[in-house]
Image (cartoon, rainbow over all chains, first blue to last red; front, side):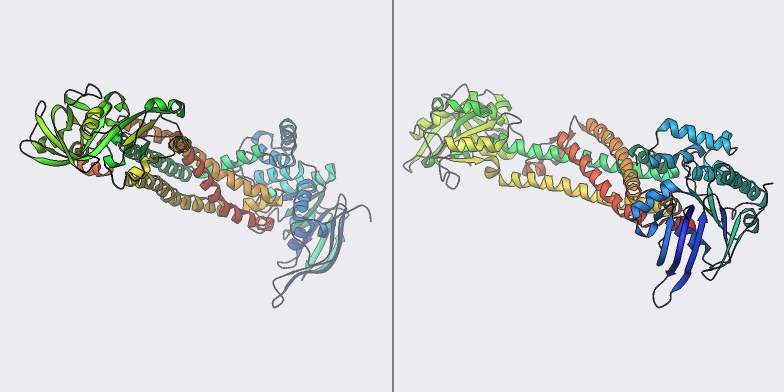
Length: 236
Length: 403
């Protein structure tokens, strides 16, 4: 399956020591095709966040292999993993995690600065993405001056401005009200459909699950169900 | 990752807690400023001690006969022809003079005292305190002048004064007493009463005639300001192979020791002040790091490397230190300029005389001291950032996801 952006084979992740091991994932086989929007769901402790972290190169499996965009993460050094996260993966965090001392547009530019993109190009791309996401008028405001929904949209802008092959969102709606969540999901849908960005979300939120094109339910570190949705809920 | 980005981020991070940063910077600048002012005062004392030691007939170097310092007297004299050493002029020497110095007893009509009887070449004594001393009466007219100069304190002890006659008794080369009457040409006021009581001056030929010798007991050499001592010492030692060349440190060991102690005091004071300050800096930086665990984790998650995280903390520390040091140096310079005209310590003059410090303390701020304080402060600022940077780099990307 050459079009798989993510390919996990026999992935096991054990935390703790030999005396009290916590088996967060137990031999999971899992793949994500390019352009899919996958929702990882399940109760607390099911392993959905652990799987998301492994796919994002934030953690390493105890056993098994994780391949992202053709690169086997097990073989990468820490700096190579940093580089992979910088160039291939976009992150949207539960708590937005914008840099409070930078304005919205500077937050979006920041990741391009890490990539070494020149000032004029990154400013142009940052403004373009913010404008595309309906945030053109708040670019100079700092995160503290933005609503939760606006902050999360800026976080999405930061995640997609470098055109990553994979967008990972960990409980993206946890700090948002329902209306704002729907706006965010509409935005993700647009990104997924118009830009072809592969999205993986770990979530408890049924609204988020309803918008994904594929729902993977985990329980006790194993995949309990994996279903594709032919007609996910349309944006409001 | 670009350095300018790290500087930009660090700079903004510093001002997240404006009051905390300002307090820290204020502390740094007060510490640096106070260290520089204290440094200038100590250098002033130090140089005062050195100048006193050099002015008191020692010079930077003194050439004497072997054994003279252990048993000073006319038996340990040597012949010295000034014209026989034209090379001295090329040694970076401001001036030199020869003297005959012997222990003697001075007797007035009322009192008797033990003194050092010194025959000098008056025109060459601009290298010692005698060159610019205040004199009541007249200065000696030349090496043949048979009159004497006595110190103010000695004149009081002898109950004598200008124009009066006294008798000086000393030993000749053969061990027999030599004595002669002298008229007092002038009474001098030296910095300390110890000098005034110790030295009686006359023309060098006068003493040589009294002792029936054609020799001197010492040649005093004073360097031009800024000339380094060791190379000149080396050359003098090679020039006067049969004689002892002694430094002012050999001749005034107490002053030399206090000179070294001043250096140590400056260093200790610096370490105490900056050491206490560094604890504050470390504490602030650690607090700043712990407040930003989620943010630093996020930066690592989106691809910032460990080195960049370390650099960010180090740059924050260095920016704080740089601002504090810059303002501190200005503060120190202002303090120095305020005191530059001198501090009147005459109320403590008796105690200060023992140490060789003059009653008017002139602070000295040396560029090398400023550079040293600035340099060491920056080094300490860097060292202070290592532990907080280690704490920051231990933060894992997952910390951003879990919080």
